[in-house]
Structure formats: C-alpha cells, structure tokens
Image (cartoon, rainbow, N blue to C red; front, side):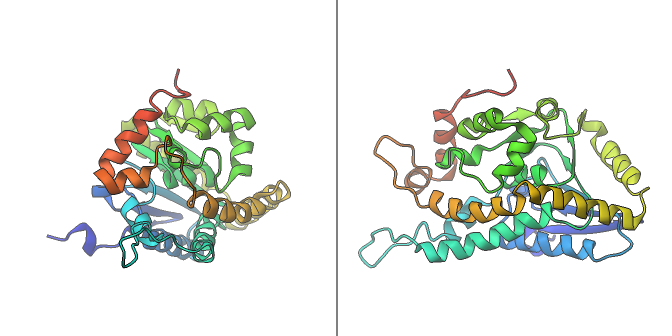
Length: 295
C-alpha cells in the first residue's frame, strides 16, 4: 500500500480548460511543510504555463482544506529546538530568518500574482496558510460548515502578518484587528458576510458548485482572463499589494523571534515541555471565545 510519504503532497489534474491543484496530505489535514509549499508553487506555475488551462481550482483531500504549515517542520526549519553543547537553546540569526521568510513571501505572492484566475474550494478547516490561500486567490467557494481562522496569530503575532493590505481591503480595518488580535474562528456563512468567501453552500453541494463556477469562468477568452488578471494586480499594486509582502518578511522575522515575559503563553516553550497537542490546547484555552465572529 502506498503511504502518504510515498506520493507528492500536491496532485495536478487537467480537464479541458480547468486545472486542479489538490493538496494531498489528508492524514495531516493538509498541513504543509515548507518543501510541500514550494512544490505547490511549482505545480501552480505548471498550470499557469499550460495554455490549455483557463482557470485553476485549488482544494484539499480529506477532512480539511488546509490547516496551515506543519508545526514539526516549522520547528526544524527555524531551528527552534537547537541546543548548544551545554544544552542551552540557540537562536537562529536574523539574517538566516530573513532568507527563509523571503522565500515564504515569494510563495505567498505567487498566488496573489498568478497569471490565471484561481478558485479556492474550501471545506473543513482553513487556518494559517490555509486561510492565507483563501484570502490571496480570486474567488472562494466554501462549505457552510467550513471553519476559517487566523489562529496562527495566537502564537505571538497579534496583528503582524504577511498581507495586511489585502486583509484591510477584504475586511476593513476594525474587523481585521478583531480577526488578528483574537484569532477566533468563523464558519462559511460568516466568511461570505465578512467578504472572504463569494458563496457558501451545504457541504454536499460544494464540489458541484465550485466546478460550475470554474466552468463559467472558463467561458471567457484566454487573453481576456490573463489581461483582466494583470489589470487587477496592477490595481492592487497601486494600493500597496507588493509592499505588504516586503513588510511581511521583516515582520515575520521579528515576530518569530519574540522575547516572552513569564506570564505570557509561549507556544513553543509549552510544546517543548509537554508536546504539540498540549501546546495547542493551552493556546486555544487562553483565547477561548475571544472576539467570537459567529455571534
């Protein structure tokens, strides 16, 4: 039997003018390693370069769309468990962090600046990188019971994120502050009201609806779709869309190298002490019901 580790983390499908990017780490709820994210971008470029493809559907296998980056991989890449010969924690240098974050920014930008329209088909959870994808692509079709959240902000970011200009345009300044300061989750119907999703449907109608939207988008001429997307991106750039990622690189480097006070909840310290599941439980208990969006 083929294990999840023996197959690529992203599947590419083509059907007429529709290309599909399918996140394929279902056992991890499509949490992606940094290498997986780089591969996803390679697959995106592959469909962009295919002249037969007019529109791209982005979705995930299993119970969730994408729950963000794989935390075990985050710890490895940023050297958060590194120790010296005396067993003392060793912090990665700022210059090393900046190089990592430069690559991340380029990968996020790939979705906002894709040459062709992208529709996210969202079910289950879309958290961290998962919600970033939904926020950066052109259209979002989601299930009524999908759960969106910027829970990554509870790790010590409190409003420091990669694509703040995009969020301000989508949600408005006050709602952005609420979403990022509390990291509270909300469902598909609330996502439509907030301006994140275009349409929310019962889960059993999600795939049918997303495919229908993709077919309708594909009725446009190829040149018109690419030109329209380019003009849209130019309009976003006039509002600071490129600069936000430049700012996000520095912000993320600083935000992942915080000094915590004794009374602060330090996710990675708790993870080292009691494991990842305990750290998640502690983080979410601290923010339980904070700034609820659904009510």
